[in-house]
Amino acid sequence: MSLKEKTTGANLIIDNNNPGFRKRLETNKVIRLFLKLLKWGRMRGIRYYYSLTAVEYIGELAAEYPALKDLLYYAVSIFEEAVFSRHLIDAQVIRKYKQAIKTIVKTR
Image 1 (cartoon, rainbow, N blue to C red):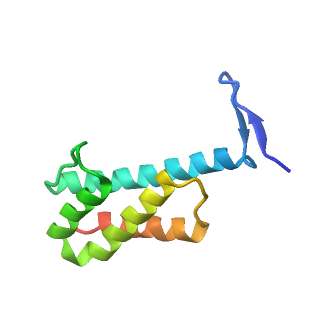
Image 2: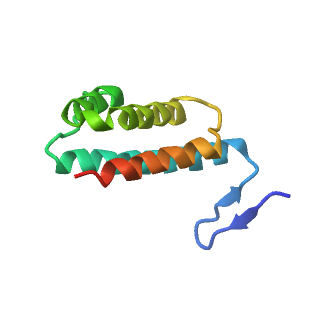
């Protein structure tokens, strides 16, 4: 059974059984979490520049925080997979990604 709702005013149909829609939700969630990582880096003096790829930026963070290297590279690998692939990522992997980001941003 598909979940279909009409939102008030927007006339947007949300179909949870549509793989494209689910992929968009997943990608948005992964991007929002990655933005927290960018903000954390910026607050520590490591700015993100548009000319950098995600991996290059993570490399800069890893150079400053070597203890977080594995978590940082894990996070960027899931970020790139979510953004650049067409398949959905396993929910357990997304939970692990979320936990990795939380662990990183709690680091001082």
